[in-house]
Amino acid sequence: MAELDPRLVAMMRNPGSVVHTPHTMQHLAADLHEVCATMGFGIVYQPQVDLRTERVTNFEALIRWHHPDRGDVSPEDFIPLAEQIGLIGKIGQWVLERACRDAMTWPEEVGLAVNVSALQLADPTLPAIVAACLAAAGLPPSRLELEVTETKLMPDRPATLAVLRAIKESGVGIVMDDFDVGYSALGYLLNFPFSKIKIDRSFTDKLPQDDHLHAAANTIVRVISGLCKDLKMTCLAEGVETEEQLAMLMQANCTHVQGYLLGRPQPLPETHATIRDIPNVLRLMNMRCGHSMGDAQQRQTQAIPFMQIAETANDIILVTTPDLDAPGPFIIYVNPAFTRLTGYTAAEVLGRSPRILQGPGTSRATLDHVGETLRAGQPAHAKILNFAKSGAPYWLDMHIVPLCDDDGTVTHFAAIEHDVTLDKRRLDELEQLADRDTLTGIPNRRAFLRAMKAECDAVDVRGLSTSAIKGPCVAFIDIDHFKRINDEHGHAVGDAVLCGIADCLAENVRRVDILGRLGGEEFAVCMPVVTLRDAKALAERLRCAVAGAEFATPAGPVTITVSLGVACYHPGDTIAELIERADGAMYAAKHAGRNRVRVHAPKSDDRVLQAPEPS
Image (cartoon, rainbow, N blue to C red):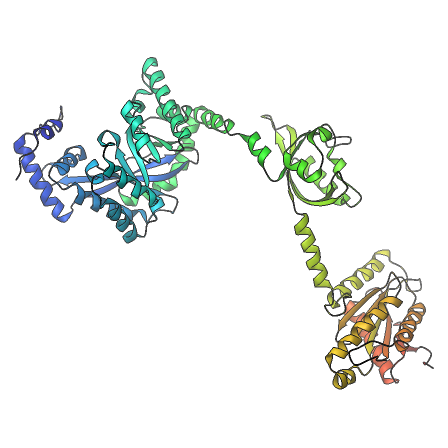
């Protein structure tokens, strides 16, 4: 066996513990070779926590070696020895393979941190090894971080830099471990693509001590945290063991921590409980520490450039005073998006009520509902029609929230409004298409029946007696011998006839009447507020108009007649019953010879009234 480097032996002498002599080191090296043959090591995991989200973000994998005679051998003893005797690559690859498999048992948002030595970084095959371990486990590269101790880096070696860059480009994070503020540490930031910095625990240890050390350590932590923020790196403090340290780190704007306070190194099965319990643990610590953590979080929140966010937002942001009664509320802020949509500058609307944006088409019911909701102290949501300075209408999807002071008193209302004019226009077009007969362009069966039901419901609301002028009445219209036209001339001619009849009927109904095509050769007219006698006369006018018209078709002019049945709505009728009576009257007209009108009498005498026979 090769002689051990005397410097290694000296490094491994640990005052207060067993002194490692060259003889004992030779035996330890032999034992290390033996355990490496079977990889009889263990791995434990220590959580890293994001203080802003109160969630575990990563677990750091830590190797353990339990010797049957020596007991637990510290990694500080056997890792340098493994580097010395050429086993570190083999051990490091095993740790990476095992830890990647274990990490697949955690939720997707929880990542893995694995330590690598400077000797591993000198191996040009390390990027391929890392990629193979990730692929074998199925772990995405974004969930892995490699931690490198900065004191062992060799920034003047281009090969090491190439290895780090290759790993970083694959999506794996590179972490600088044990960072301090020395010149060499800052130099590493210029040469290596780090995504996270771990503050050396020596600074964390000094935080709760005497005033001088605390002030210095706190300043250093703030400097490192600010440096990370400017360089867009994550800042993590390790060695956190007390709640006082944790509170001070939060005051120093350190966002991530690791230490015994939030979790000791633990076997894999225990990590799942840690992931679940960390949020509650942090909340309890926050309560015990008073407002230290909360104040730090508040300072971080206050540092967010909310005004810049509002000024660059695409949606309208409008803030008013809380007085809802006229002439208030009064606008005190609008963002540039407001000006772009409405044409009003901020100077033109500040101090004025949002009512200047409303017009005749703005729904009073919607405004009343919004006002009632806000008076109850609740957020309001509505779609509303407003009008620009030019008078152009636009639709808004509007969210209004009450803003309160510490006592819960509403001090402002903030509205966040999204322009949905195009969406509303498309929806209206779709609704119109859904309600129109595609051939003739008049309302289809769905739209006609809906409109007729509305008219009948209005009668029920008015509560008029059956002897009064009431309506509505419905005329059911069927084209006579239409099948013969299709059979003799084809469907193109039949379609032209249908379109011609639709136009003829539309020209001869009253403005208040509702015309629809129910399907095939069947049409109908709903006649509101009309007596049965007048409805019969209107139906006769429609019959005569069709009978006296010539309809242009691809086969030349075509004449045709229609048969009509008329019925009147009675309170309590269903739409189906009304249509059935009109349909029955129409069939009575067919049986009587076609080209005529028949009227279904009121229920009282249940007779079919007959219009004058066509001459």
